Image (cartoon, rainbow over all chains, first blue to last red; front, top):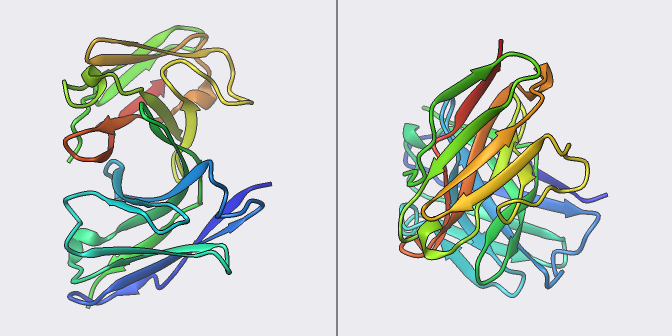
Length: 122
Length: 111
């Protein structure tokens, strides 16, 4: 059974870098049929796509984050990661990783992790 | 940064039918990109409810249905049940963004 699990510090200081890892179990991150994405949700607010990565290393970022975000994939550990630099209180959110199906006409997230709350505070 | 607009809330009595609209533009839904819907009960992660406009993943009741026309899409819930109380989000691809966009979200309340 496929599962995704986010991990990382729950508290990050302003101006520092937020680092999260998503561990995939039950499927290979090298599965050519899927991409892997990060989505966040500030408390009481809606969903916001951050970025997407393919196992080969190809990346797609939301322009709102492009200058601050880095995604990477570690196929040996079946993990992919997110780094968001120079964080502020506005980056406080639940961060989700998800498996993503992609074609010429669609992008959708068919399986999600449980999410991890990251608070930015001194 | 949502570019897909949904009503903030809809409500209905048990057994009734409710619909949620999702309005986009010429760079996303209107450009021919497919629409997908997610259900998020309180305190839980989103779950895929409808994909590629009108397809249900295994395990999703046929009370849920989706449609798409022009620059908009809709989610219908028939035979409303208490367990349907949740937030619902539409999602599509936006070519000006170069990635995914989500709707503003709709809270469904069962009266």
